[in-house]
Length: 264
Image 1: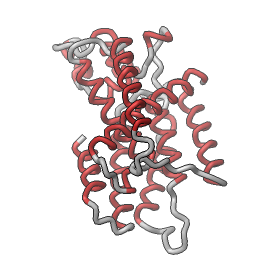
Image 2: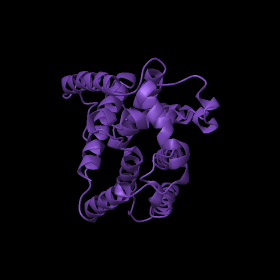
Image 3: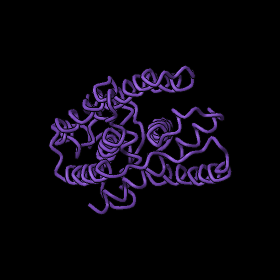
Image 4: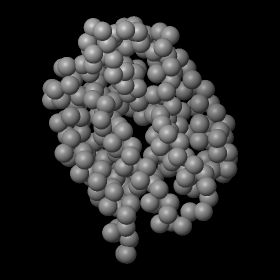
């Protein structure tokens, strides 16, 4: 479980740094709606996924891919620190009280779920094999002739390969879905509205949808399946869109960001 927790910290830091940098560069005068930690992490994961895809076209997704990504993250950190005094950079949400306790508990439970033996049938059928091919060779034209499911070529497989750390640990750590689940657990809990008259708003009901989906899919968290990230991203997009509407947001930038998420 220590290795899982460490991999989660690496994924979070890289996603946050890249996401925060991209948001800062694209939206130099960011509206408040785009300053949350959740926006930075989601944006960063999308970018890193696209990077892993592109890298897999020319080389195996292993040590070199990660070193280049880490070097870029150092540049992102320098850029963010250089703009730290800018009014456009603000700290994210810091959960307190019962929200903080629930968030910590949810992360702990997710850590246990991630540590169990994969329960998803397709993991043994082709998930693990496809990721291993990407780790060792990158994209291999014609691989579907060996096993037709290896021709599915899901974009998420490259992200799993990038953060498997097989080159470091000697075995693939399939922890990306665990991180995604823990992240959305914390997001749903810490952003749940309890103010009078807001408890039954659309964004709150959709946050309950995240919790429901994660509970139903708990035994698939340990698997590197390709369903969890897109399913939760659809819910996240709907939540943020509803949230912006509820706040009466007229600024087009937040909606434009969600459109980019939709295209991704």
